[in-house]
Length: 352
Ligand code: NAI
Ligand code: MG
Image (tube, rainbow, N blue to C red; front, side, top):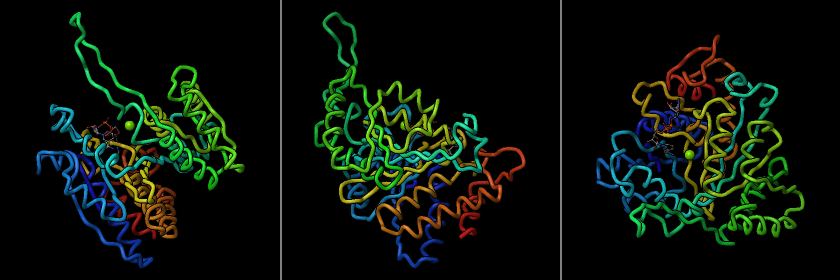
């Protein structure tokens, strides 16, 4: 299922679909696509950010590739029918609890990072973020008026053992396949929820003797990410800390326009999307970077469709166009060739 969404969503998704079609042809994958609506596009058509029919249709596919949702046009709507609600709905209703966000610095883009080359060159970390629980979903929540007339906002931070265990297993397994190091990030010195988080990780650790588990407080983790990010291999954390840390990690790699993500459920079904939003400031100009979405499509082939060879080929094609010096505006540096969204997509197709 293809859900382009809003803003630059349709522009970047179009390029990712072209790349998938090229991979399909080359590797005989037998892919077929359905298109649907989410976010503002769905609000305009149906009055809600994700209809139940659309949700059901997405759930019947093998995977979902999504662009991004949201934009100023819908900013004044009430929270319940805002575009972002469509994303939260698909993530929670399809049980997509494991959000995998790789932060990889392509050597060709070393000067695009905000950190010194020696601190970031070769950076390759994976942040595993719990996506369907924690403070973003906890009840009760709201804004209430106290007896003295003062307003009070409140949210609930809650994780059950089983929720922690399943995301921990995802992270341990990912670490096994990568560098064998797992850092669990919490705030166990202050928050009871994360005391339990830490206990569950420690209980599971003996089942993964080939993984070296460590724990870090989130404030220190934020500091270490910008001080010495290469110390990390896989990081696992809850929904809110993961949201923040993965955006910070994103910037180490130069542009959020390069970063893919996968959100998986227990059966391996996944939603794949770039880490960035709908970039209303550049929408419609044909200058958005489609690589995060193209790399998300590669993750889709690898994690949900068991087509690892085609996924590798897409990633190699992306690397090749970067070698050739092609850059969209967000990653452009002197001496490189500035290209449009469509030109970048076409170059990846041509690099197969
Ligand atoms: P954003 O990620 O859309 O944009 C931040 C900055 O990065 C902007 O300057 C934008 O031009 C640039 N940027 C983002 N993607 C790019 C790409 N592929 N190529 C080149 N430059 C790119 O975040 P922002 O501005 O905070 O939010 C804009 C809208 O997107 C809001 O309505 C927000 O709610 C929504 N949003 C949606 C997300 C999603 O669909 N998963 C995630 C984050 C935000
Ligand atoms: Mg975010």
